Image 1 (tube, rainbow, N blue to C red):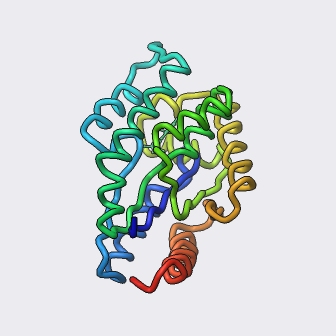
Image 2 (cartoon, rainbow, N blue to C red):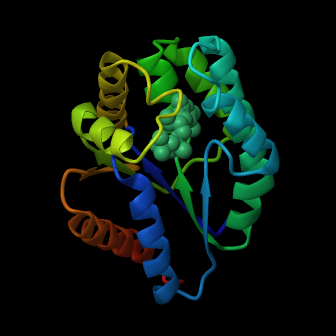
Length: 214
Ligand code: TYD
């Protein structure tokens, strides 16, 4: 596959979705390669259904932790086969809002499900497709949740207790230590312009070192 797979990760309110959109606009002005944007959950038609099951259940209604894990895995398996691989085979630069690290951080550290089980499921769902680069926008849960709540109504995961979000952030801290080449940590407390500048610098280096196709 000749494409480039870039993932944006972090806790709620870390700024990843804003940065993903800014990166798309900037990249489209820089390269003749196709640049596409997608997300998990919800990057396919099936994924849209799974996303509304996962995020729009009403307060009081619960989803079992293992059922939740399997729904995210189902979304990913469909996304990999129906969207990610076909675009990467066409030489696209694919910018994806969340991927396997979210499952490790949220279901592994947040819900405290077994890490080996999660790694196995991620391997099944991705069929071996790994990102070339992952940006992790790091903010504390206090800052992130404050931003997320100011945006409007909170989804099912945003409503979890602060403890849960601290564990999720710790998940990202440890993932970044385990994958120092793939995961680049960016200080998400900086201004959106400063974060964007950092992202551009890192991407420019990575894209030119991967190939001269930009
Ligand atoms: P997202 O659309 O990024 O929402 P937000 O704007 O709140 O970040 O992600 C949806 C939610 O799904 C988010 O709370 C994180 C959660 N999630 C998991 O728990 N596990 C996963 O594997 C993925 C992909 C997302």
